[in-house]
Image (cartoon, rainbow, N blue to C red; front, side, top):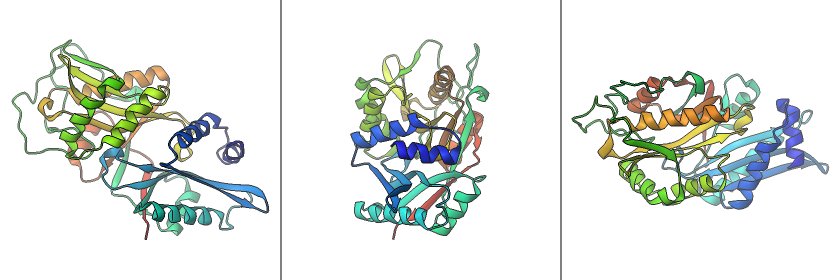
Length: 321
């Protein structure tokens, strides 16, 4: 790990020891999900690549390896080391039966863009959206009458139901009824129920892992549950990200959010995001990111309404043949 930290610092200009320490901890605890390789040349450490299996982030159904970090030592770049690391990762993806490798990168990082282009990555059909924590439009005020967009009928990362009609599209929750609080282990079954109703799929392994991570590392997970009169009606699963893809500033990534269809149009989604932004502001996190399919116009509209906009980070996919 110390060699990885030193190499990374030489490239990004600052030490990210905490980030790599957390990634190592996660890899040791979940060895089946993490794929990490190093490269040596003449007995010297010259590069590394780190990825993990995706199980359902952002509403996706197809499994993939999420490429989190790849680096080659200065002075050794351009010698095929990065290509060899990626080839080893692809080989592992085939062994695991995983059909794709996904990643993101800033369009300003010309070197990594050229690397992905040469490696056969293509633009993803998904968009990365972001919002500065201090510039969101979700702060609730007394007298607010509309908390959820009228067009949003089922708030999920995977599906928006355009057909359902509700009588209270423009009604806000009555003050004091909606309780948004930090996720607890006892919320697991409620979240599984809501997620299945929204997505139409059983994602127990994925949701269970998020809940366990939230309970085991509160410094990473900032997940929430919304209850109305004691009934769970929505949830948001988010995590603080201190270094994925070469980022140097703390970012929160919103993996999954869902509202029980029976409680659509009642401000639950906005209330969850509002509380999430408040918590992140207290933690000193500057920005929230999420990923949305380009054709999911309802969900895009929801995030745009909250002041999200397209990120300079682009999403890429590579099919594993």
